[in-house]
Length: 92
Image 1 (cartoon, rainbow, N blue to C red):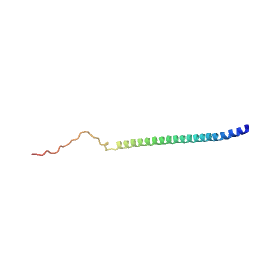
Image 2: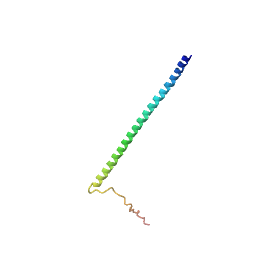
Image 3: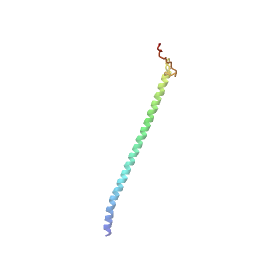
Image 4: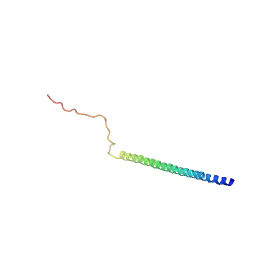
């Protein structure tokens, strides 16, 4: 009788062990996926910051070249005062 009990208990434990193994494997795969996602995001952030630095440097270089041109004035500025002429008035 005890032998039969042990066999049935072992048979019941197998599905539970199998389920535990599935959960363990699933957790491991999820952890690996999240680690890979974090790595890819870190790489994308690093590349984005590098591109921003390159763009900033390119703008600084362009501004320095523009400023260094002899005989060229800086970008036109708006003085804020405009002269407007009124239309000629009609004579009666």
